[in-house]
Image (cartoon, rainbow, N blue to C red; front, side, top):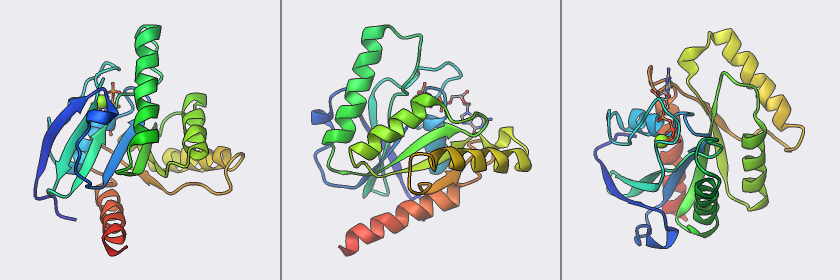
Length: 201
Ligand code: GTP
Ligand code: MG
């Protein structure tokens, strides 16, 4: 898929105030600092479309970016960021879960996990919640540039093994790097195919 345009539309903490049009949207979610905003920039080939930071907790709102004037990418705040206050953390969690529960336009979520780490309870719990709430998702292993190919394969294999303890099958997954653009074509092609299926139905 060619990216002809990508524009920031709005930021918000209230799912009821998100864009009212019916374009399909794809949400990026995962722990703080996993690389959600960087991945969006990489996909759009824009350096600063979504705000990134080396310090976790950068994205604090629901951010809508309109792509090719007919679908949205949604950048969400990270979960599991220990340094925000308990009440702020709860607010994040509530609007994240509200977003997924209420946003009818959300067709697919990408749950990002850092390819360097073994499966983290908070990510597994989040995916469990997504499953229980029937929210479709794919997994994205980020920061692939940080591992040698063999180590990367080993980690993904170990992740799949862990998932199979509770899931019937490993969800579809992608391997990406915001620095090398690895995975860009695959992910965009996947989004394109889902958009086409929606148009056909
Ligand atoms: P929050 O908004 O705080 O939840 O974080 P986020 O998930 O949006 O992460 P963000 O994109 O801001 O990236 C966090 C840090 O990881 C930044 O320093 C990025 O430069 C770095 N980073 C993100 N993706 C990659 C990647 O693929 N490779 C490398 N080497 N660094 C990355
Ligand atoms: Mg962010």
